[in-house]
Each structure stands twice: as structure tokens, then as C-alpha cells.
Length: 336
Image 1 (cartoon, rainbow, N blue to C red):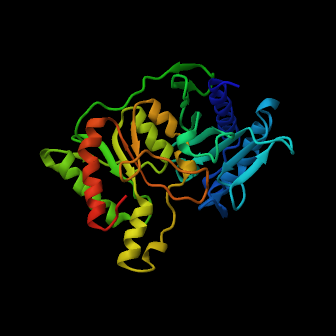
Image 2: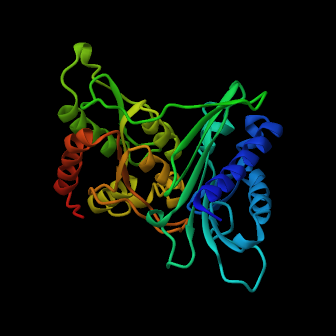
Image 3: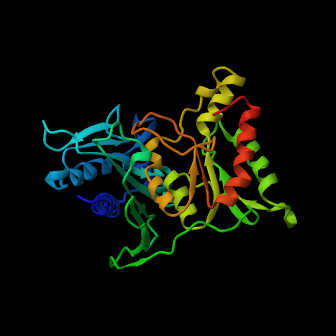
């Protein structure tokens, strides 16, 4: 199977998840019931409901692709499951976040995203840098009439579509990062979704704003939009709506732990590799994605690993903001 067919095979899984959620939407209090803690995050009832859809869709892949090794939130304590005939060598490694942004969707506040990526099995342990195809599918709120999806392969173009949910009719989307060279009158943020990292995130964002946004009337130079979904954040960059975003929660926890032993463990929820399964899509759209120290972003297919990352709409913004982040980290004793 060629890479383009793999990308669309991932897309089909996401579309099946979306169809299931649209057909079985329930009251927020029912969907928001916590049913476990796996893969470094709380598993809610809405998450559990789509897991059989994913397993069934993967099991229906052509025989020559199976078995696959699935890494996903909700697939048990280690997040791993083999799908396909027993006794054969693994053909592909697939990593999926079934609902990235669960908290948005279960309260019907904002769309979430299905994220999936795939790496070949024959070249060693799978990682984000080795992925050859990826797909992201928007999981809409109840009032949405349209939803987007993205699919890409390393040897093919990035495809972006907006689909009418009632009819299935779609149209291509224009994509590409912002060409602005500062943050002035644009959206940019340091992620801080939960208590435990707000103070440090705010301090870093102030330093970035001072360097990357000239003074504006009324002081409203940079706009902050905390989209509680790493996939959603990447979509905002891909669509040119955000100019910059970074998520440094693992490093914030380390700083807090150094300053106050024990404090860094009060807030353990951070970005995991499956949250970044859309990385190939962002790169194909021309978005600059690195780790906090400016290195090429990579992470293993592992549900427990913590990941820090930065996304810049273009190289000019990266050159402006990246030194600020690295200086801020160095002042707190963190080096690459």
C-alpha cells in the first residue's frame, strides 16, 4: 500500500469516529463521567465510547497491511494493542488520539479532533519523525453544520477539506501559516490549560510579547486563545489563524519541582506523543515545529512520555521568538 492510501486509510477511521459521535451524542453530564485514568490522562465516557469504532476500523484494513501495532490513549495501561492475525510480523505502527480535546467536546463548547499517524515497522522503534502519513478529523459541536479534515503523506500533497455534515458535500480549504513577522494584533499563546503552570506560562508569555509585538493602543498587542487541544492548536497554525503557540508543561513542572520539591508533581497532565499525531500535517503546511530548545521535534510512540513543543507560523516568527524562550529557560537552569 502506498503512502497516499495509508493516509486515507487513517482518514476513514477518523470519519467513522465522527459519524459515531454524531449518531450517539448524549447529555454533557453523561459524556463527562470519568471512567478511568490511562495513558497519562483521565478517560471519560465519551472517550470509551469510540474505542471499539477504532479497533473495528483498523481490523478491516486490507490483509496485506495487518497486523498493526496500535498505540492510543484508552487501550489499557500501556496504551498498546496488536490488531490483526496472530503470528505474523508487525507491518505498521499506528498512533491515534481518538478525541483530542475531550473536555471541549463533552461540554459542547468547541470542536475536538481525531488524530492519527503511521510509521513503518521495519526500520526500528516508531517515532513522530519517522511517520509517513497522518490524518486529522474535526469532531464537531452540536451546532456545527460543517467540519474539516486534513490528510498528508511524506510523498504526497497535504489535502484539506470542509464537509457539509448533512449532505457529505465537501470543498477544498486554503491552507498555510500566517506571513506576519510579529505578533502584533495576532493570536499567540503559551499553553496553560490547568492549575500548576499558570504562573510560569504567564511570565514567559509576557517576555515573548515584549519582544515580538510592538506597543499597541490600549495595550492589546497580542491575543490569547487557549484551545485545549494540541491538534486544534496545530490546525489554527495551519489555517493561518494563530502565529505562534508553545506547550512547555513538562519543563514548567521541572522548574516548579526545583523551586519547591514536591510542587512539580501536583500537576502531572502534559502533552503526550499521541497529542502530536498531526505533526506531519503541520510540517507539510510549512509550519515550523520544534521542541522547546529549537531541535527537530520527535517523540516515541508511547502514551506516557511527556513532550514539549513550539509551533511558529513562519521562520521570521521563529527567529524572533525562539531566542526569548531559550533565554527564559536558561535563566531557570534548563539547557538542551
